[in-house]
Length: 505
Image (tube, rainbow, N blue to C red; front, side, top):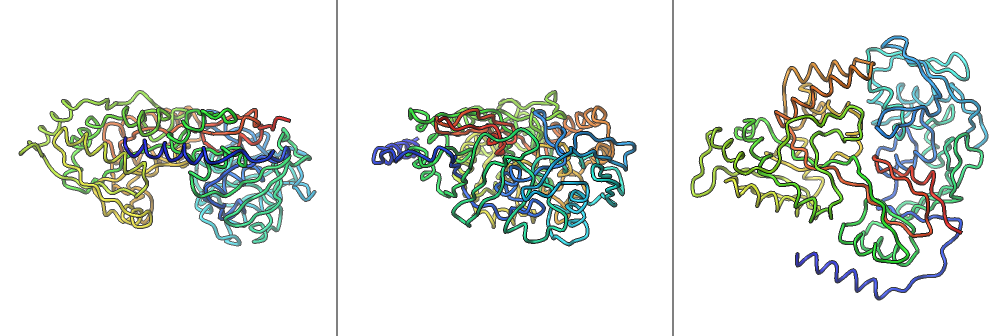
């Protein structure tokens, strides 16, 4: 509390020392981002800034609906005549920003350049089940699969991979040419990316003439830029304390809506203590999420029951829940054979990053576990060391977030026994043959209703066995200048709101 008061006082002082600057450019929205995109070639860039800016410059074959299912994009319709064949019919006419028409040949080239290794990218793994792609005419694209892969449609939709012109090579990195609602203008590492409206866009045209993404790594500096009016908006970059200060400013406003980013705790199931499901369930009952949501996140988070967000078509909220219940936690620990000696049943170690919000969270969890006799030792490391230890299985308990990857139910691959590191992200070495079978079954099933039933059962089992404790989903919080209008937040927290945003004259 003392530290929070100090932060509030410091920010208030800084704000009071600054006066508002001159009038902002009436034709340019300045969006503050924490880092530069690493690569604006949509076949290569996998960091958040690259994918979110790419999604404004390029079009994907498909888009994503409000319940995180797939919807038409460049492909106005599609058919799946059998589980190994996907036929897409392209919207016509569509042109790239340089005036060239976009046809099936461009779609085929985009994916062939990955599959043949002409472009080296981590994204190629998402299309490992694609055998070949045909373009029988300008408006038709046919994907032939090696084996069924229900995740293919998701991996062809918003932010996954945009369509580039035929024969595009590494020059896309320097000067990306897409067909999206905005055109690339310029980029300077660690300074800015500038895009402008595509007046020839085939879909709903953007209202903003120009957007400048200004790179501001420091959150306090971002807040000051917003206060001065030299920055127009930022999303999910400021602490709740800072947001609460800024929303008092007459020239600023705050928008927030439920998001999909999830905070979770992961267990090492090879550990002699944590391999007992009763111990994992006891830890879940011992944790009280609500005070952390209220005081660490300002109430801008929602309790979680699945790694999938509630917005997902495949979400199942009817699963075992672990509301705060210290008495039940103690009963489970007694049954597991861990009586308290001098108030302590056993010690476990939790590894974390040095991120401030994470350190505050684990300090609260440490206190809550102490109340049921579990002594939690905390070890904090800088990000590279921390992630290396998690990947290598050098942990008992850890805390991380899924950002974006949990929006499609194919995320459950992280619990498949074939995905132990280095072959995947099953870092806790969870293994259940029934779960493996359900994951495999869902991936091969193209009927969404059947898949939904399979995923519902999968979520029920995971909620009982707890390879993860799902804590909360963070809200999307956007702070913006009052001159910016018509902002529509979506669950993914991407930059699609720039497609509809307007600047008041």
